[in-house]
Length: 122
Image (cartoon, rainbow, N blue to C red; front, side, top):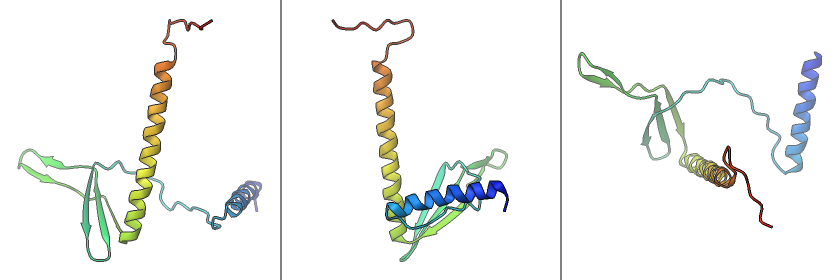
């Protein structure tokens, strides 16, 4: 085992211990693919026991023929319970982002602008 592998194993062990201390399962995330696609369009289809999300980067137009195509780059299928969990998780992340952006905007508005001198009250 190389020194780098030992270091990574030690770092992972530390993370595992932290997860176990907080009552969370011992899970290590392994990314099989790391590329990301920017998605502009989502088509949602549902059946009785599944929800299917088709993702596309957008419509491609052929101006010569006047035809338009929406190519699907990725398709995900999940149970309704997992879809509900995804909606709740995304909602939470969006709320956190909105609150952080609002706080940053308020701090920027309160901070002296370039060339301004902050006056202190005596």
